[in-house]
Length: 131
Image 1 (cartoon, helix red, strand yellow):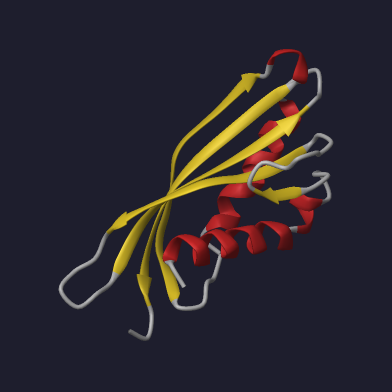
Image 2: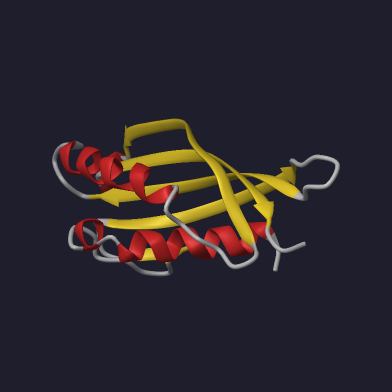
């Protein structure tokens, strides 16, 4: 399985396993949902590039996660974002091992009359296991 698919699935599973996060969301989706009620989360695009060494097959992945909320303020999004960071490095995928998971950037912005949007982008470096 490709690193992009394996790690993306592992991150989704790790986020869904965090009861404190899921108690505050109406859903966490793999890609943009057709319909969802806020607050909800979306694991967005995952971009991969080569990252390895002579005898090590590795990938550097860029993964985006967004949170959507209809509250008057962005306060709840801040609480939700704080739960995501520690979970990312706990993700475990068959065939791939996370070496580092680093927050690249995060942003919170008003989404017009639709409430608030928070987006976090991570750089995740992985190596293939058992190759």
